[in-house]
Amino acid sequence: MVAIVTPSLKYGFDKRFHRRKLDIEYTYEQQKELRNRIALYKGLLLETGGAMRNRLWNFLEHEGHGWLRMRGSGAESGYYIRSFAYRILCLVAACRLIERQALFVDSVVAVKSDRRFLEAMKLNIAVWTRADLYAGLPYDGGRNNDHFFRDHLTDMADTLYQGEQLISFKEFSRRLAEDDHEYRTVFSFLDGATREEAGRFRFDRLVAVQLVLLATLNRFGYAYQKVPYSQFNAVVQECEHPVVLANLCALTREFGLEKEDGFKYVLSAVNAAASDR
Image (tube, rainbow, N blue to C red):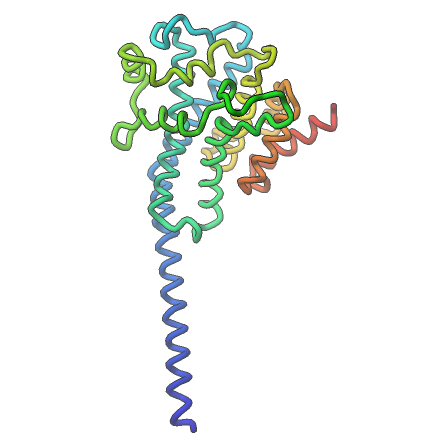
């Protein structure tokens, strides 16, 4: 009996051990590959995110000055709106580069921090494109007046790739001078955006974008990019329609980021503002 049973048990044990070893090696290699691919473009994301965040701080402070006004075509418009459009597209393009890298590996087995980073990239695009950010408001999601259709936005952003680099603002301006039709949607979104617009909600979308950027940089950014809770609270106070903030919190939860540093600040600031009201 021993002579018969022992080889069978040994074979079964060795087979399970080998399979487990292969699973561990596969998981490790996929995690390592994803980490390396994220590292290629994380710096680009942090730089473009920081530039967009700084522009939004500037806009929230000076939105009443009317700097977001087109003068005919995009090329004929001033530096402020042209550079604003450029920074939006650079940010989305950087998020897309990272998203694409994840397609080549099994991100399901990614370590938690990398998986959350990918989810933050998706949220940074979704906050521009999700019409349900206005759920509860009289907004027609079939028309992209105050949001972007995802495919339109990503198509515009993809044109900024030059190999694996992004084109300069000078090159972007040159393209506008030749033909700005390709980027008309982003200019239309920005044109004339102010705090007090009857029947328009794009200002609140920019507030939501700023909150997501602050959270992303607080969680994944350089030390100098992190800001205290008071700045999250200050941005929340800028929102004209509280339901947009509630919808942003729901969107954050949808992407599984509500317990992450930075994103927790968003939810806390929104809840505190709701209590004050």
